Length: 121
View 1 (cartoon, rainbow, N blue to C red):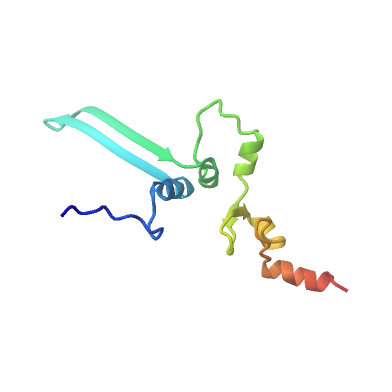
View 2 (view 1 turned 30 degrees about the horizontal axis):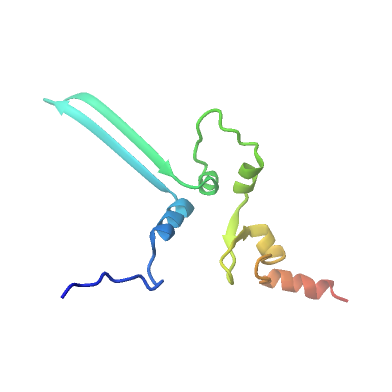
């Protein structure tokens, strides 16, 4: 009897979830390789690679290649701190999420509710 491969029921993470997490959190690889003979280093290679979204790279201050235009609207949007909405988990600028709420699902923060109460006559 052949065994059927198990299917993901949505509980685990697929490739898209893994890529999303890597781009969200970032991934840095450091490697030092040295070839030595009789205690004398003949060849040394140092590698540093980073994989991250522009938003994550901007958040952690990673350097970009020279000639990168950092004055574009997309870059300006990427450097704005964002947080996931507690209700719908969409990424919204932190300042907007705290002061007004989520524009996607209508969730309202406690600070925004308090402001509404104090401004309502």
